[in-house]
Image 1 (cartoon, rainbow, N blue to C red):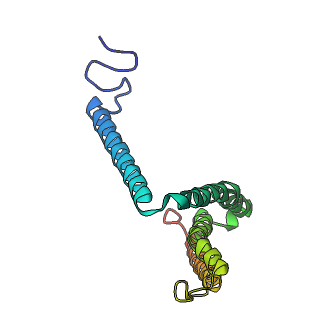
Image 2: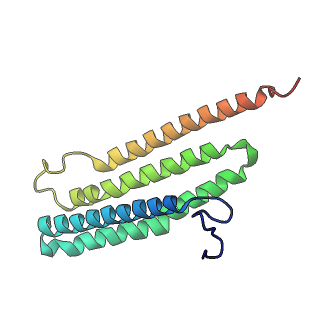
Image 3: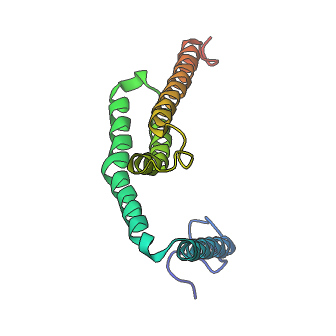
Length: 173
């Protein structure tokens, strides 16, 4: 007896995928979940093994701040940049929107990584060899490089799309 929407041969009524593919997909998903869970458990082990218990509230605060920064700043910035670029109409290719959004994400991730070093350097100057660089300046230079790369990449994409649009179609006589 078959259930509604499936046939007795193991394929769906529309003839889409055999049940062996469903079993394989379930096995892949299960293995990915197990690998991810193992990674999280290993991360927790390393965290509790290497960080003193008195420092854990600071780590929790940093993780919480990263989540808030992502949800309150990064995600809306990427979302609204996509909306603004798409409002530009046909003049902006979807690929350019992706390049700009990718640049924002890369710069924001680097900012999340570097801000603790900037804060730590401003709090203590007892040993200048621990944090020897000017991390604020380097972060600003990184943002400039990311913006330049995104701009050049976008200009190349724009030029290629204009050239492709100016060529006559192969279907035209």
